Length: 117
Length: 111
Image 1: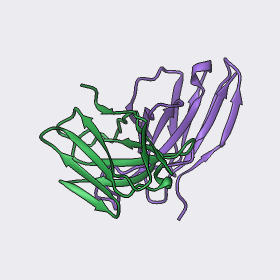
Image 2: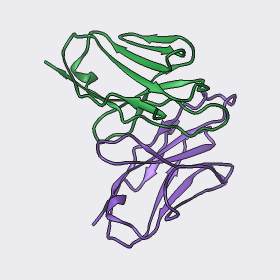
Image 3: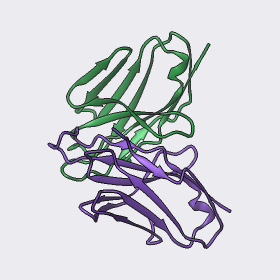
C-alpha cells in the first residue's frame, strides 16, 4: 500500500518563475492538504482539496493555487516566485470521518524542497 | 490565545530521563488531537492520537485536559532516537479538516 508520494523531491527556481508541485494521496484517501514549512517553523496550512474543489484556505496570496484531479491527486502551483517562498512543501492526505480513517488523521508525503534564488 | 501554542524548547535531557511537553489550544470545540514527530528535514509522522482523556503506547503517554484546553505528551526512559521535534495539531471542530499546527517542541536526548 503506497503512502503519500510527492514530486519532485528538490527544485531550484529563480525569482519570478512559476513552479508546479505534485502529490498522490495514500490509497483510500480523498482529501489533500498542502503546507509550507520554513526552517524552524511548524507547517503552515496553504489549502485543502476535496472532491476537486478548494475547501479551506490559509493566509496565502493568490499566487498560490491548486488543483485536484478525479483520481484525488493534486497539484500546487506558485506563480511569480519570491525568495521567501523557499521552503519545504508538504502534502498530507486524509479521508472523511467514517470512511475508515481516523478523524482528521493526516499522512504526510516526504515533501518537495523548493529553493528560490 | 493563539490557536495552538507549544514551548519550542529545546529540551535537552539525558538518556533515561522522563520529559513532558504541553500544547495549549484555543478552540474548545476541538474533538480529536494528535502528536506528530518530525525528524530534521523529514516529514511529520503520526506518533499518537488522543480522542478522550488519554492514550498510552509503550514509553509514550498522551493526555487531554479539556477544562484547561491542553494536551500533553510524556516520554519515559528517553532514548537517543527520541531526539526530534514534536508537533501537536488540534484540529478545528466539525467538518473543517484544516489542521492548525504549533511550532513544535525540539527534544535532544543526550548520552
